[in-house]
Image 1 (cartoon, rainbow, N blue to C red):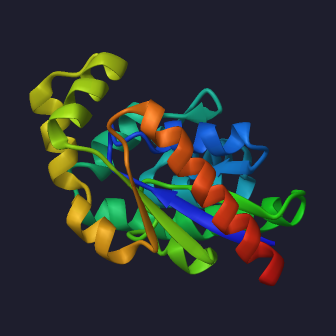
Image 2 (cartoon, rainbow, N blue to C red; image 1 turned 180 degrees about the vertical axis):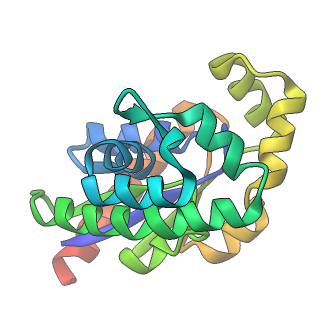
Length: 197
């Protein structure tokens, strides 16, 4: 089974791109949703997170996101430790999930595709890019954030030039009407490559 990784910064539209692939019948694994699910459901992961971050990491049996976010975003080592616990579990979960899917290829959606080393789990990578002003506008509208908050998030993420240089393919997401044929073309390419894989 061929695997394709799709990444992009906040507001770039990687989720929109993944929805378009899903409409074409391609199975999509959302690594962010996968991580949240595993951090709640996986007993070993819960134990390791509690050992590192204390019992406050879980409240009433559910992940205490506010507490954990406060810890990891104020201390670089805490974030590195959390990633070292969670990322291998997500990689293993994605691999097991991919084995159960049908079709020519599957997609791994991850904002941290290169940062987390998830690119090592896939055969092809796609970076979704968009102008910063458009990314800010989209994120403010979607999340109710201020432009300043979104700029801080963008500044903390891998920049588009780096993503573009690392990825096998890039999609520029300005108009969805242009995005659909671009996704259809990539689908054609990946389906063809999967048969030769």
